[in-house]
Length: 241
Image (cartoon, rainbow, N blue to C red; front, side):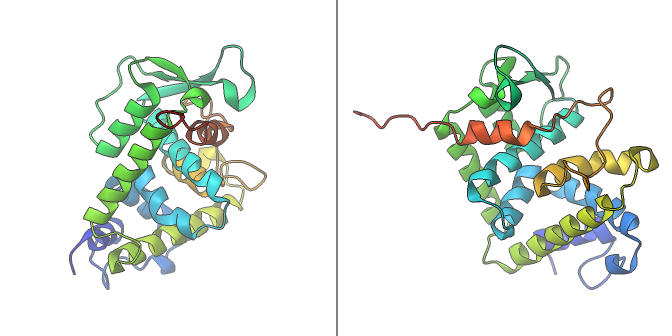
């Protein structure tokens, strides 16, 4: 078997479908230690979001914003940008995203386009104010086209298998977070998993995924809300209106 799902399965388990490490027989932490870097190496957070979110029982109005928040969290962890509060706005409306002065050049096209949508020609922007609906629509369509080109469309076998594997990872992450494991027990895995915790909505609350120390990377809890404000902002008037 070849294709996108076979590559992901091999990356995670060490062998093609039907072989490799049997994930369900491993301890929970060991499963996630294999899953998280494997998924990260094979796809962007945006792509993972577009694959799983149609199957998640959450209001559609929050879906795209949470995908964007997850990807921005991943980029912040990799030092492409940093997030802070500033200006005259309070709460999620006041979140500011700034380019890191020595940020690496993004090699993933979906990430590069997201950075272009968020920043434009600026070095620092108020995230909730980035309400260019046309640009957000362009990014969403670009991700969908790439998913389809890789044989991962909703109605394709590889898309179905990949979506199920990602949803299993989300359930495992939720069960792991519910144990209340401290950050210090597995900081590398916890950092790798945090963007996916944002994606699956388990980054906040009593049973939340372990949060990175602020001195390592600041990832404010209101990031998904700020991204939702941006992507669901007022639509531009139609020509001639």
